[in-house]
Length: 172
Image (cartoon, rainbow, N blue to C red):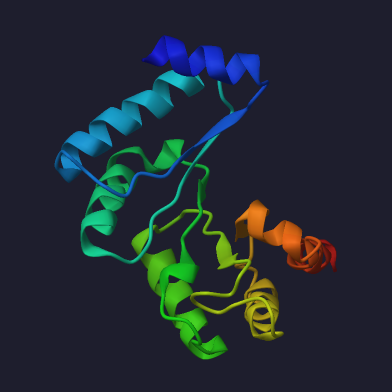
């Protein structure tokens, strides 16, 4: 399996992996051991330079990813937390509370704020509230990046929200 991952990474000139499992057939410790060893091996062999995970606020998902974080957090460069998995229509203050809770769960991690292009969950990008929340996090020096799901949907909007995200991240 590792050989196949290395072939794919080299063939497509990739420099990292994004761990996004949501249906588990083993317990949290087994998941942590297997995924953690995969990340560690790929990094130690110079096959990848970064790794990220994609958890969301769901008991089984969190238990697996928190076990991974507890043991291998030093190997994980970004936590692409799925803030869009929360109920649609949350406000800025609720979004900031969710962010602080996940920053506490993944203490020391680089937590990426996220939205879904269609605005179907969490704090959507179609109004200014998502960017208002990100501006507040930037002011607090907590904004390290923004994760967008998904490019297929974003294309319909001319990647408008990605451009707004880039502008926010690049501003002083």
